[in-house]
Image (cartoon, rainbow, N blue to C red):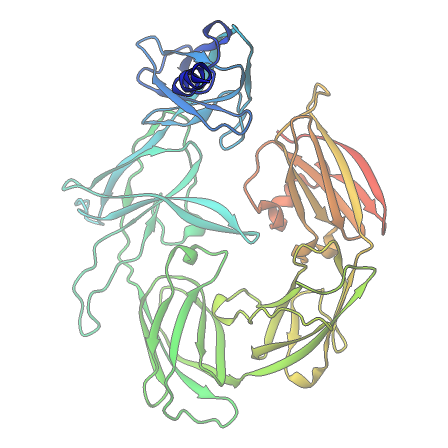
Length: 527
């Protein structure tokens, strides 16, 4: 008995069995600058295990020849990545930034050699900011802006921001290679009773209109010098107006706040909303506004107001903001060949989309009824979330109006019920993505786009990535005509933009889906 206990104690003290040294493998390779054999020294290379639920990582620093080695690796699959200041991070085998790389499989006693990771050097934009007299503008805010997409609208977002030095010089560095717009805004200058007066942003090559700004195509590792900007003398503008109760025609005291909201899809999106209190006589004033498209919004528990406004280079006075009473509308959802209506929610979005006027999203009751509250007259888009249910919105009518053809008008609660039919008789689609050599293309972005007559319906679009065999499966699809696209690299949500999709229209594969059908197609990747 004592010998048994002694043997058990010896086993426990030694711990779990380890992998025999002779069974371990290794990975060796190099990190280079993309498109060259130039080694990247002092890069951090990281390896992560992808097997058996174990999560283990190791990292090493490349030597003077850009080399690295990982030894004593258990047999299995590994993902290898590299990064260094001044370069874009990369994974081994990735075709484009942000895509998954290729897994490396290490067998017992196997050494994988000559594994090459290519890093793309970041870039810079530099120049000088000066006034109309040629004098340097110090401490000016200089921004690198890039276009992206949000809800299918092309917008500008900040990529980097710096300030000019005492010579008016600036340098935006470590920028990802892509296209940029550069803007400069001087410090606020003292004003009169209105306080500091900010000057307008100037966009390269020297305009206050972002639509006329030049796109700067920044290549990897390049310093785009000489991007100089001469500041404009134009000043920000002021908006003045009055809130009027549309029902009574009065402007009596009321605790209201007016908010100026940048319109989505315009350059003004880079600016935050501005709010001011309404005076007892109903007047309001918003100062220091840059040109752009905006929505003026005011709201309380009983009423709200909304007015779209375009701001130029001149002050705007005598704005009338009509305050309209809020009301509720009722609706009903019918399930047709579906799993029922549990978990479904309904949303009304004001068009153009204004977050401050988003109607609350109620869960539909078990009998399919729901009520949408705090609605004011205007144009709306209907969105129905199916909560994971396998189905599609077959029809939606608000009185005599087709609510699936946005924007549709809601003027009063007496127009009728919002009647929605959800069907479970869906279609599905299988596709394989191939390159020009007829080889399967993994990690492509495959997008199902409805025919032009239905492209205002965001619920009909679907996007998914192809697997390692280049295949995708789309389920729960509404019947109808579509085009299917497969992109190697595409900005998120760009396919909702009619101008973007128009450029690729001829390269999409047409497909018709019937209720309950399952179609298969072959796609050629757009590179």
